[in-house]
Image (cartoon, rainbow, N blue to C red; front, side, top):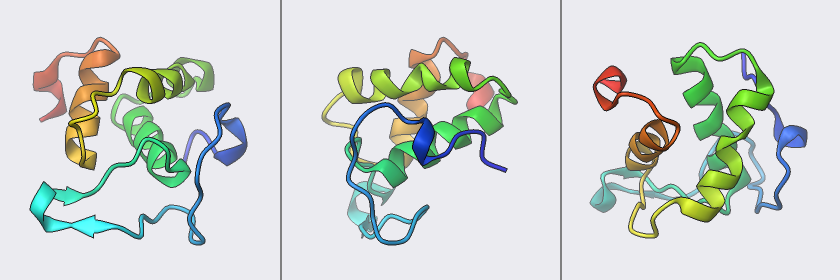
Length: 98
């Protein structure tokens, strides 16, 4: 079960018509494209991060939201790379993600 939902996010996003899905897929960039302006993408990424880290505190995991918007490098275009970046940015050991 997802820890956070759309109403928990503080920033404005674009939302697809089907929550939890990204309408854009590109094999050429290594999987699903990650768009930090897409509410579905950000919500899924944060919830996956919380699940992998067994985080149950919304406030703890929601500190990732402004980091994604303000600090995610522009050259990160797919979800896998965004997760690796978030993992490091939140102070985790990269090896634990594997």
